[in-house]
Structure formats: C-alpha cells, structure tokens
Length: 158
Image (cartoon, rainbow, N blue to C red; front, side, top):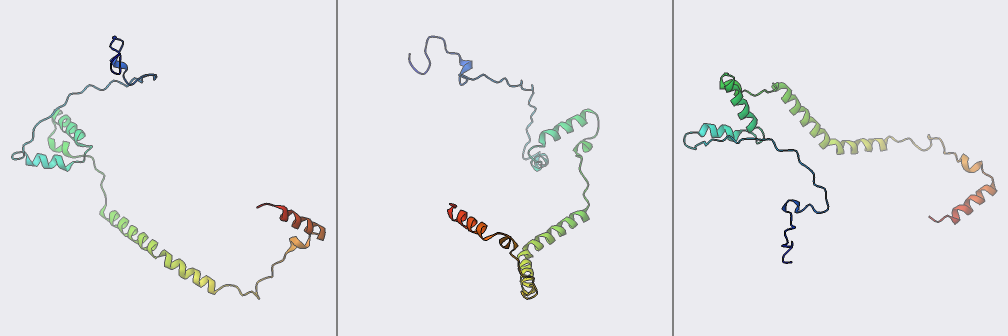
C-alpha cells in the first residue's frame, strides 16, 4: 500500500472527510443565472456613482425592482423610489438635545452625588437626640445560656 489510501480500488472519493459520521443532506441550491453587464468609467460614470452609493446588501434587490417595474411598463423613476419612512426634523433635533442633556447629566452625576452626600453628613441627627440602642436579645438569655453560646462560638472553626 503506497500513500494514504490503498490502490486496490476500494477508495470512494465521495466519502472523504466523512469517516464515522452520518452525512447531512443539504437542501438543494436554488437554480440561478448570473445577469451582468459592463459599466465603463468614461461613459457610465453616473451609473457607477449610483451603484457605489448603495449599501452592500441592497444592490441585487434594487436591480430586481428596476427590472420588474420596467417589465410592467412603468417609468424607471418609480422603480428608483424606494419606500422610505418620513422623519420629522424637529423629532431628530429633540432626540439630539435629549441625548446631549443625558450625557451632561451623567458627566455631572459624580460631583452631584458627592455634594449631596456631603450635605447629608452635615445634617445628621445628634447622638443626644437619637434613641439609645437596646440589647434585648442578650438580656433575655440566662447566664448559663450565654456561657453555652460563648463555648460553641469558641469551638467553631471559621
């Protein structure tokens, strides 16, 4: 045997790379025909500028729309009009202003919070007015219970 596969005729070219696995069947590809034409830089500059101005995923769709409209007998100007969503300029300006306000508020937030926390610290309640803390939980236990609790805490391995 010379090389990777034997020369005895048992090699099956269709199974290369599929040893031990079941092959998945792909759906058949759609049949198609490529329709192309040449655009010259000297005489078709306007077409080339229009073509390069489109985004990379919409060129085929635009060409299909143009051809279908032409086949229906409509003027090509109607085919070039893509459905667009009208946008009010005032709404865009409002979004721009709101975004600028939010950005400014977020930039000023650390200084505002620092000043706010400084004022809260100055207006704290004096200790003489505050009610003293009661330790009712320790008073309710007997001396024996306190001793047992301390012994258990001493044995605990943290």
